[in-house]
Length: 226
Image (cartoon, one colour):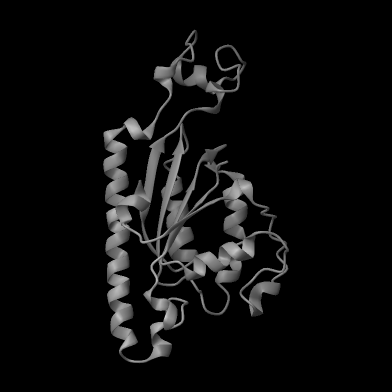
């Protein structure tokens, strides 16, 4: 919904669960190359982030924090910071969905996008999610059931209790507003690029692209979910 409202000419959807994303080794060998020495699927994603105009990340809260796979990927973004901060000036946004633990993620994403990557962070879309106990098979009678904690003792898992953002006009409106904020940021950035490109080809690549590549507009979303 956010990317549709942003009106991007191209969106690349990436599902981290389908890729090999290993943990950061803290070896600092990326300092001189802006790329990681670990042989997995992360470096191609870093290429995408560097080439993209906007980066929208989605995940879900687990045990009061962002899910582990997304946090591992965020740590692997460290090569983008060395020497140049290759993401500076790009546009960022986030989408999180969960039954609890959403309120603290605004500050987390703001620090990640603005403090860590130097991007123009437009905000976090927070959506109600479905507690995992609703689909584990033991949500109605399991000890410590999150479903019973949310709906009360004796509650039954029924279709009407499952949240679907597509049936939530408020969620759609907030998603549209965030997408429009992303689009506005991109328009301002591209106006800057067009003006800078009149000065010199070298200056026109300040967002991490060459002069020839500066005409492309791309967005992609990284999802921490399967």
